[in-house]
Image 1 (tube, rainbow, N blue to C red):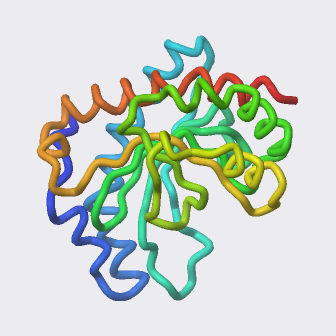
Image 2: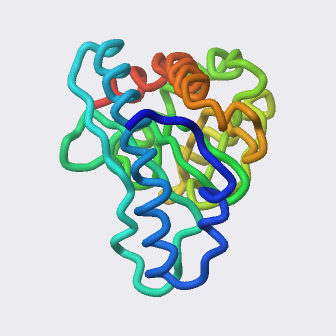
Length: 205
């Protein structure tokens, strides 16, 4: 299977009522696309980083009532899981696709990583202006990297549940999403700009 792009039906998945019904649509519509995107991204990252990387596709297994509002794939250097490790994500909400370097609350050594990012604050701010930041992976909201403050990173350091995600959003109506080859290139180009910060996060022990 080759990736030919996302379509309106993929985003409409998040309007389906019921946990089981929505999960069935995620599995049939979106996850096969995630497998192709994820394999491509995993191979790319392994080549660039020089070590084996592993694809994880969100199962939403902890959910028993509420259907997921988004879904994603993750690529990490750990075979067993990704949440406790710096990782890359590609996923969908009902109105956009996100591409993230994700550092979420389950990450150990979050304080040390935040300190390194504070020391490298000027480099993060130099990312292209279409890059955005999220402080909570469960929410749609993001803001431009040019508006990132040192206080945001201090909160990431000091608040146990605080998170830091940086990357790009693509609106569901953007033509880029309908061209599989262009989207894969855009995803890898985005991730390449984030690799220095991924390496910084990994350097903390």
